[in-house]
Image 1 (cartoon, each protein chain N blue to C red):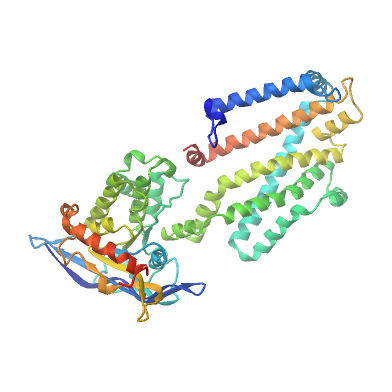
Image 2 (cartoon, helix red, strand yellow; image 1 turned 45 degrees about the horizontal axis):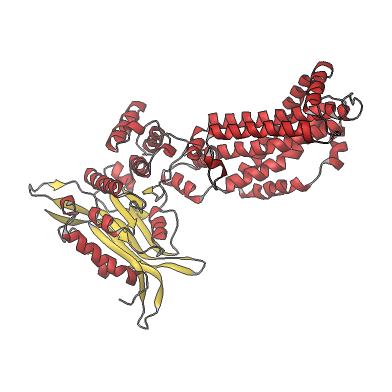
Length: 263
Length: 300
């Protein structure tokens, strides 16, 4: 316990958990008793949360948004993986992969009307917007991971007389898989924020973004801004939980990665 | 206990030169490793692989030479030839047949014991066995892998990932995996580096054991650890720089053949009982004194 203030020391898991609990309790206490009155208090937020669950199908909308987000992440990952793998293996595709990474700086907002016109319904619109939005970030992360594979790994595979296809499978795909899942996990946060923004922009297909918009404009309750705060809180908690789930999946699929870090 | 060198060339480097960005690393490098036969007192030939060490100071170009021997890089000039390992599989070992070094012909064990971290020890050895080029049933492959696990003292670690092993254990897995690929040349890059004295001695014993079990396998050790390398080798080649008549350093390292130490000829090779004796101590001191000259720090 005395190590928590010493430099470059890592706290043990129980100590770390205690620190988090302590931080959460202190935050709630400070929030409840010291913040200005315009900021809604935790108790009021919980009251509004209950109202939203009962009257605005908050859980249903949350699940709907999560499914759309997962669907978009899945398709984006497939597209991004194809581009990154092709860029690494065949020189012809490298400029394409490079170009896609630069699309991170291209805002989709001015383009949204065209996507809306080209998609059959607004649900597809959200998915396509998200795919367009997140793929450049995933390609950037995937490219960085794949390019960081040292030549010695390819040499090692060559000395084992592995064929080019086997080298691709073992060195490029299997070796980089944990890193690529990390990239997806890191970019999930961007996707999560993007889908909420898309739902706020297109409000006639539901989703947690629509609930957030309605709560902060049309349906402000008796507790002032407590209702949008409640939605924000749910968005935050869901994001944290999915992030944790992705971490568990990574731990389950690639246990050897954690053997290194645990050491 | 005598020995004789046969006509069979196992490794041949002729006029090898290698530069990076106009910076000469190796120049006019010539080396010929010939097969060796050992005669014991009972007049029967004892199985004995050739174990050659190439010693030199750090940063002299040993790793470049290692990559050239492994066929992972091509020389700018000259040739790197090795005995075709596939002829061994077809029992055609009598005729000389040298082919240019290419990746996959030699077994390679890196200094940092690179192993696929997503495979367990048994799976790593299975991969090695499958790459041997021999057609084996699953049952035979399993039996062979179990034999290697036992031989390399890895049975209790068979279901562990490389991240769960110590440096010495990883090295044993790496050697076993490469041995299962059935190479005719096993290249070891700094095999004694970063090991404690006990593990270092284990590695030395392991190299001796391997050299006794497969006559047709040649082991080339590239190292700067003089005392360990000379104990397991029959020949020591020294690689380093030299100065011209004006005492200026000539760019690029080469093999100093005039300094070659033939431990077999001296009668001290293959004798672990002498490892702690004066002979090895003196040879080590003699080579150590040459290192400043080889690194270009002194004239002689």
